[in-house]
Image (cartoon, rainbow over all chains, first blue to last red; front, top):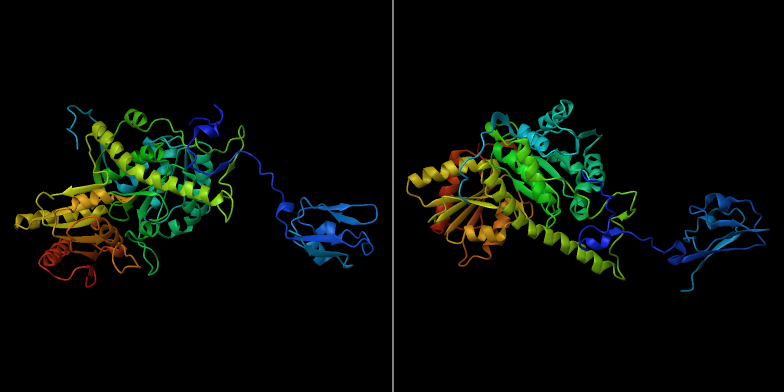
Length: 96
Length: 409
């Protein structure tokens, strides 16, 4: 058995119709394909942290007087809006 | 065919069955990792492998896993890390393996797996038949059917050369008939270890895709989709797979030729034409039934009937040119299958042959014979009937019919 790592794997030296591989990270983040966006009503938020606990991608961030959403990683699933006991989060459509 | 070499070295002979022959071939090919799950009629093959590894005859990792799905998944990891791999399965085990089985050709992993062919459930059956291998014929594995125990040993060794050839890079199924070849004992000749070492070479199976901490990569990321470059990339990989299959036709021939020079055993790589000189009739066979078919052809020739036999060894990729060339001069063809094609109410080899006959003018009348299901014998009498009905076809009997040989046994 030959150890593949010496010499280094050189993707330019293999045919491009064999097995699909990716050697660079994709720059795309969930925020790039989200269709619904959560909007927090600061007046209703009591900082109970329910949204923070439930968010599957941990995109809830703490502000001084309310919790907000980091939109580059939010995928728009709406779980926070569903779980918020105070109805402080609404999902609105992304403009485009 | 080439001239037989002058002096071949004296080699060891032994009597063994097809399952042991396959295991011996795996040991001779010095695989790095074996993962297996026992299933009738493959079980003794697994036991032989376990014994060879326990005895130190084969220096390989043996992975006992909980089922066939894990068998092939474990071997995917091993192959991506650079290991030469082997497994064997059949019937319901092959069915349970289907998800990773489906992915293997697309990953272009040159693995070798024996299918010890078994009829599929239901009705409940543990006996031979080609239905399991035939059910997976469109997945993209190379599939070769063996006729004898010796051919099982030789073909498993050759399979590594074919799979690992850079023009091919596809997994290979070596099919040997459950019961007839798995348990049928015959005298075989063993090649020397040094000869096999030189023949198969040092494995380098992950030059194109690897699990490698020094050079991280995503293996098989999402490709395709509705927009962007995805669909065109997907087409490129699919076309690459098809090209690999077509290259295999050439490579299988070269590897069989080289093995013949080494051992003196020239197995027909794609299609064997037996007594086809001047033949007006042809019968077609697959696998171990061929022996009885050849005897029946000899008897018919003795009676003056101009009949020959065409055996298909390589079923995937289907050797269209070789089959249409072999059948180019005949006036009627009878195709014998040990499995059924549910879509066409005939045998799968028959349906494939129809496609090859499209290239032959004038049109050759043909018909399908189905026998040997669930371990049934296809006897000399059955083959005599096949030849007789094919002769009727030549005289103008309706073509395209399907005859079930063991219907009244």
